[in-house]
Amino acid sequence: MSLNVVNISRYISVARLNCYLHLLKMLPASKNHQVLNGNRRHTRSLSRKSNNYNHLKVESKMSPRVASASDIKTEDTQYTKLLENSNEAVGRNETYRSDTANQQGLSDKNTTRVRKQRSKITIKYEKNDEFENNNTDVETVSPYFTTKKHEQTDLEQENKRTKWEPEGWSLVLNNIREMRKHQDAPVDSMGCDTISDRTSAPEIFRYQVLLSLMLSSQTKDEVTSAAMMRLREYGCNIDNILETTDEKLGKLIYPVGFWKRKVEYIKKTTRILKEKYHGDIPHSLEGLLQLPGIGPKMAHLIMKCAWDKLTGIGVDTHVHRISNRLGWVPTQTKEPEKTRKFLEDWLPREYWNEVNHLLVGFGQQLCRPVNPACVTCLNKELCPTGRKNVKAMKITKKKT
Image: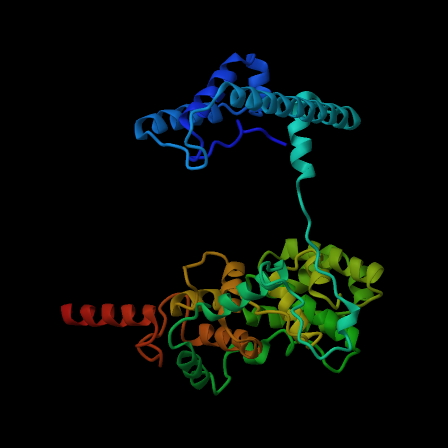
């Protein structure tokens, strides 16, 4: 038990209060601390309470008489017994703390930490089999605690409700479809799946799709298509490419951009496909990204064209540029990969399959890198860049 100097009540007479103060002052300092459990606030509170009672002249309702010598003696005897009990409790506590510290190899400074660790309580909710055949509705989750799974579900729902999306994007996309309805852009006749040999074996067709995308990086579609035609006439399969010298391979793919580096990538990738994938290409996005010279854009397009699996949006230079011009990203981006993440965050998945092909052709014909045809674009009033360019052209005409 903890002795707080016998919890002084407001009903105790002033004489008894002074008697307790007198006895408290007679105790040694160490025992005083033991009785109060190291807290000196009780003594200060007691003194303040005594002064308050003196000013208010509070009289005891239980016993209005003044304390006699026998009362003091009785109280003294009770106080001595309480003090002995308190000393025994303190001794047992110190013995327990020292034993615990010795068992766990801790010093006296760390003993408090052990005591705090013992005070931790773990609450577990278990399913009761008795309620399986009972019609009574029972909550399986505590109403006072929420598991991390429920918190994550609520957070995902909140993110879906507050998801950012550009204003009027559906109308803009329909206008792009209208402008691309003739399908006469270079990508329509010289795409990676078009310039690959569909009549060959499936693994050879997939290998050619991979090579065509590797060659298309930093290269126009016309140049890539011509290089693939030369490779197909030469024999575009894994065994034949491995037997071809680097010099011969370079002549076949020249003048694609960075052709010397691409020769190195093609040889390394082809060797990996032969040894690790038995003459085929990886059927997963992770496996494709481990190949030399294959980035996220190529990997997503390979999965779509070679395996007919939709894993993401292939963002090349055209998709990256047009997305920033249309305001389809919450902030302007400098890297295509960041643009891809923004697009996939808000664009519904059913549009992922067509958005790359639409925007690439749109960027090749109208929304060009230099001198875009904003005047003839159907989105000139919806596109921030289009409004700005059209306004600038009107001002220039007025000046001339």
